[in-house]
Image (tube, rainbow, N blue to C red; front, side):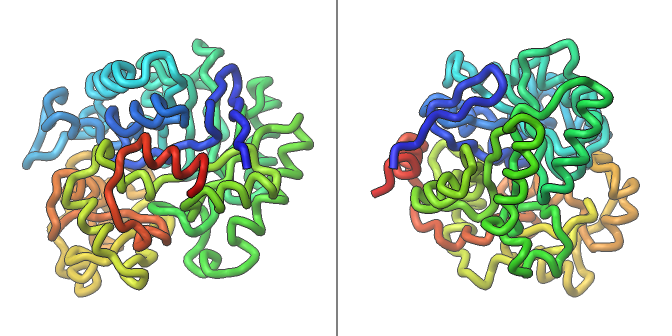
Length: 363
């Protein structure tokens, strides 16, 4: 099946494949730049940019951690990441992912616009005020991530009433994705919440608002999966975990090795300080947390609002900012390694060019 280009706002993506934004430091300049260069949409994660290039762009750190929100979500580092990604992909569309749950959400969205993002994607909460922060950048396309038709309806209603605009596309993410889920723990395993069962109702809702393009995400792995969802009516797909298995992925070699070695039952749903279940790989950290023997929780970076300055971190047994950044720095013992449910299927590291060919053409 020939895959049609994907139009999001004023931007046309040659192949309807969006690379999921993965932080800390999984999708930065090298991965996002390379995906956009090969005709997909590369997406830079705005999470934890303070760690970029060994914390070169931050003003203050404590115990090796960027101090406070301004340094954890470093504007200087974000600009550098975009600049370096642009050297790879030129004028091709380039996206940014900004979690709604973060502290300084509005500021980081504006930073991404200023840094040159063409498309901004937001999940981890309902971004009802997203357009407020992009009004000076009318060409930047806005794409919320939802897990139900009801969520899309709420967003469209609020955006049209308040800002006289609608999403340029919407990503509907099922419960097989890596990282944070838009479902309760129980819902993640229920048939009616699986991606193929929620995509049709989101498409129906999108049509009511003028046929907003719907992009399917969560557990999509290969060309056959892409074809399946396009036949269901999606205009494109978002794929995260499989891009970790590329040479260009900004993740540490340790991260790639952990995924290559993971078995199906190593990938599990965890509790997270963000307040949603999160999917990752069972590692030494998870075993320590289960025994309440995890590393000390100090909340140096003040990353996400729902954590309430470390209260939720203490509840679940780990600081998400510190543990994700440890994974970026290759700490096998203390790193938190997020993965989609199909991460165990990764069996080789290949180039982005080859992966995009496999996804688009099949084999």
